[in-house]
Each structure stands twice: as C-alpha cells, then as structure tokens.
Image (tube, rainbow, N blue to C red; front, side, top):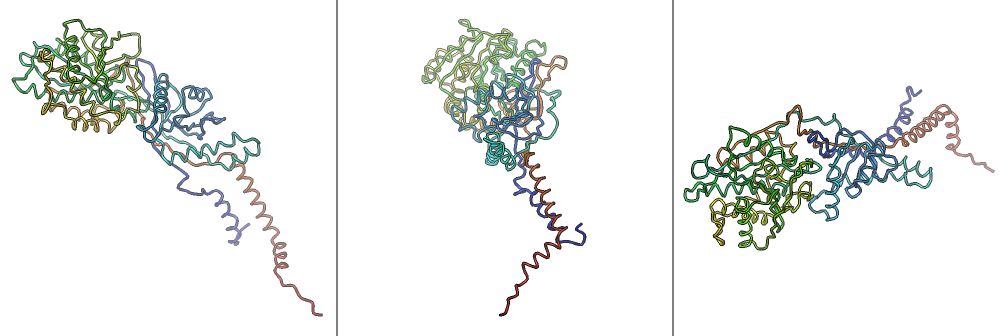
Length: 548
C-alpha cells in the first residue's frame, strides 16, 4: 500500500513506535539484592521458605486480587495474621522491604520484626519469601505499585478502567531453579588446648566452649554480633590471657584448659553434640575423661546483668560450686554494678530445641553451665538479623571477659581466699582494641551456618588465631547421617531480583483500540487522498476579488 511512498510509511510507523516505547528506557528495569528467608530441615522437620523462583506481577499488601501475585510490602505492613491471609488467598511470593539501617529502627519496629522472625520460622511455607533493604529506587517502585493499585479503590467502573489503563505495573522476577539441598554439607569444629603443669593425662580439665555461627530470618543478614560473636571473642581472649600464664613455669596451673569453637550452634548445637561423642565415647581421646566443668559463653556483649544458667544447681564443694563462688566474689569485689543471678532450668528432652549449649554436656552428665547476659533462652535478641555490630558495647564486653577470666583463674590457681587479688590487669589485662578488631572482623560478613562451608575463610582465621596461643589446634568436620539426617541445609540465600516496568493487561486493550483507530484513519486518508487534496487546494487557493 505504501510502496514508493516514504512519507506515508513514515507517517504509519512512527506513532506506533512512540506509543510502544517507554518514556525512559533506563527506568524500565531495576535489579536489586533479594535475601531469601531461611530454609532448613532439623530432625526431619522442615522450616522456612521452600520456594525460590519468582515471575509474577507485583501487588501491594492491601490489593483485592493477589492470587499468583508477588506482594511487595514494608515491614510495618506484615504481621503473622496478614501473612497467613496471603497464603490462604494463594499469593505467589512476598517481598518485605526492611529499613536500610537496621540499627536505627524504633523500639516498636524492632519488636515487630523479632516477633515476625519468630512466627515465620515456626513453620514451613511453600511461597517464596524475600527481604530487601529499602533504597530510594525500591521506595519509588513501592510507591508506583501503590499508585497502580488505585483502581481497586475507584468509586466507579469507568474510574477503575481508566486508572488501570494509565497506571504502571511491575513484573518481579527471580530467575533460576528451586533451591537445592546442600548435599554432604560439613559442619566445622575448631579446638585447641593448654596442657597443665604435670602429667597431662592425670590432670583435671576445664573446657571453655562457644559456638561461632549466627541466626536470623535471612541468612545473608545474620551477623550475630552479640549472639554469639561476643562469646567467640571472649574465648579467644581467654586463650590469649591464659597462654601467657601457662608459658611461665611460675604461673603454670595444674589444670588442662580445652577451648572449643563449635559449629551448628544455632541448630540445636550439632557441632557440640558431635564433639562430645568423639571425645567422650572414643578411646582415642581423653579430653573429657576428667572434666571439672564446662564453661559455655553465649551473649556477653552488652548489659550490666550476668546470668549463670545451669541444668542442675552445683553441689556444695563441687568444682562448679567453687566457680560460682569465685564469680560472685569477683563481681562483689571489683564490679559491684553488675547484677548477677544463677538461673536453674531443667532440660526438657521433649522440646525440639535445647535451650543452652551447656545442656549438651549435662545430658552426658558432665558438669556444665552457660554465662550470658540473657536471662532467658527465649530472648528474641539471640536469633535476629538486628544483632549487628552496633548492638555490642565493646567496653562492657571487655569487662565481662575480665570477670570470667578472674573467676576461672581463681579456680585453676586455687586463690579463692584472696578476695582483693586481681590477676588480669595492666599488661596482662584484656586488650580492648583487640576485642574491637575481632568484633569488626566477625560482623563483616554473615555467619549463618549454611553460608560457612568447611573451606570458608572464617574457619582459617579462627584456627590461625587459636594456633597463636594453644597447642594441637585442629579442625574437625562432620556430615549428617544420610540414612537419618539430623540437619539439612539449602543453597540460595541471596538472589538478584528484577523489577520490570510493565503496563497492565487493560492497557494492551486500550492500545489495541488506539492502534486500530489510527490505522483506520490513515487508511481512509490514503484511500480518499484526492478528496483531501482537492479540499486543501480550495482552502489554500487565493480568492478572486470582484472589480466594480
């Protein structure tokens, strides 16, 4: 029809290209980091998010039509009841926008997030659940999604139709296959010891234990500064302090000191469980053959409160009772501002999760206890993505390490009666700058168990640090039993989510009508061009004036 008629073909195609082209090609697609919710199996029970791919249209949380849609909501808009409503209405995915700075959120938002973490992880879900730190770009997407949903609140059908036709929508896409199980995943323990003065095999042993992994609803945001980065730092500093004493023959105590950094602590203390089995039930090791007590460290990085958690109160004149007395005397003499209390909680074997790490030892009838500033194992601060670097007070952490060191030294050196004797001061004191450096390193990356394979650099750094102070430092790894696995982890903690700017389906209908109308006008104009040409000539030709 437009053969040899370049102006007409140009007239035909250019308006269509203009209509179809986005206003800004750059803003047509956005990519950002999406952090998937926890997914793991423990003792045959599945927890967390079981799905990862997303290719759905975005909708706000209050939209009327959410079936097979990706719900984009801010933290304050999501509650466990709303979450269950979304599942009931067959929502396809959920993207929760978190404040960009988790350390500066309000007390109410903090409490809301921690409740949400607890409730979401209490059961498994088949929809894809992601978290993202809100940026200006994501804020714009969020606002645009809400504007695009204005048609749902329109008072008339015409209003709804026009609103849907003019709105911008987003297609949320996470490409790839479903998350896969991490077959043969290995959990790592790191151990070392200081031999006491005398025949090592005939000396009693004190074990100091701390798990190094962290936990939160999104593994990629779980840095665990206080729980249990502070426990790891305390163990390393205790190893450094006592190594100085043990290298001097005059201050070489007649106790073996064993130090263990255990893996899988947030998953029912799997690393500790295997380490006990390997060293208590094995004929090749005698580390636990004569244990005075096991001291576990879990969350000592803030607060002016300190609790000694026990499964069974220590008997009078037992090693555990002496440590308790030493701890109380140290606090009374040098740190009267610290509130101390012993908390007794019996082990409930019917629970799916143990409360504290020392319970792994208590089950095997080994005297053990945990020092923590948490007065309850249910404290939400023990397993939250809010446990960031800023949540730890370096000064109080250093003070608490000094308290533990003094109480432990009074026991192994049998100087309980010297009430005003302070062993760790001056050049032998806790180095606060070293504590701060370790805190920065431990919180520089997430330490969720599934993100720490056996060859992870964190293991090498911890092993190297322990090797400076301790003997026979080694890493041991173990896998879950294939026949009856106690734990199972999955890959896919961080994804790239794309938000494509798209028009709704009603816009396609309007566009099709507009194109058809335009083509009809052009067709009629071409077919009747001679009429148009004649009319234009008449309009443009000059009128003849009559001369009288």
